[in-house]
Amino acid sequence: MEDNKSMEVFAKTPIRKAVLQNALPAMAAMLMVLIYNLADTFFIGQTHDDLQVAAVSLATPVFLLFMSVGTVFGIGGTSVISRALGEGRRDYAKKVCSFCMWCCVAVGVLMSALFLIFMDQILAIIGASAETWDYAKTYLTIVSCSGPFVLIANCYSNVIRAEGQSGKAMMGQLLGNLLNVILDPIMILVFGWDIAGAAIATVIGNVVGAGYYIVYFLKGSSSLSISLKDFSVKEKVASGVLAIGVPAALGNLLMSLSSIIMNSQMAKYGDTHEDQEQRCSHKRKDRPDCGSVKAASGRGKQHAGISVLLDCPSNGFSVSTAMEKRRTSISLR
Image (cartoon, rainbow, N blue to C red; front, side, top):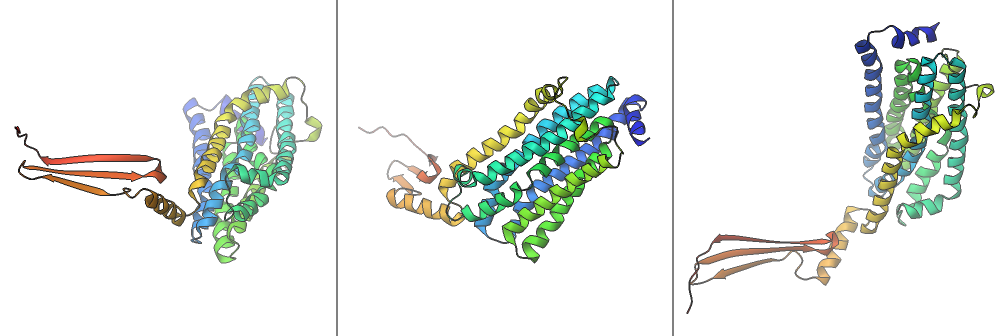
């Protein structure tokens, strides 16, 4: 069977070949994720609308929280399943796989509901202004509906590597990410749906990616299971997954939170370049010496000096630079 052949990668394949066979598809998938994360912002940027770009920048770290939670079950499930298969405990591995699937569904639905219910509070926290509020709300409302699919796609791109199917793990990611990249310019620029088009493309990409993994299991191609009858939290299934998954996902989670905090702090400086210029202009009116250049010369002392004072309060700092070309000390009586 196909699952027996895939397990031979770990049992009989030379170590160097086995590592490359599993690592290269994973690297390719990670590079595609990088492109995927930039796609929405890039194509929204082609509309030349600063406010929509700002809204996507504010909303993206919030959306990435879904991926971080999916990593909890993905990394944790992969670790437990790998050890179980190595010990020959296939039934236990099936229970873990099913646990991950249905937890992704339940947690994804819960997160989507919470995001939709507390949308206004979330927008206030991330620093959305009156100008970006509607754009950010549109984007987050649409992508929040794909919560369970985002978790499943991110979880099972890891889990099926545990049985040696790194190629299929890569294909699931590439399929969803490429579809998103292809649909973005069509929906944003051709259909003129702007930020809503970016969100719809993201949803479709995640649904297709998750659907690929679900079909893979339903076809019976795997030695694992996502059947509800195999679901269990006993025998340390839940604790085993969470003990590994939560610490592994903390890096992604904290990165998202730090981006949210940074964006909310930067929001006070405005959403566009014009806002920045206007803010600095107001500050200069309050401080006439902002950006001034002072020159001083000493006649008879053969002294030439240039003192440049750069002071822009909007940047939160001042810089004073002195350049002297030539200086001769003369004793004065």
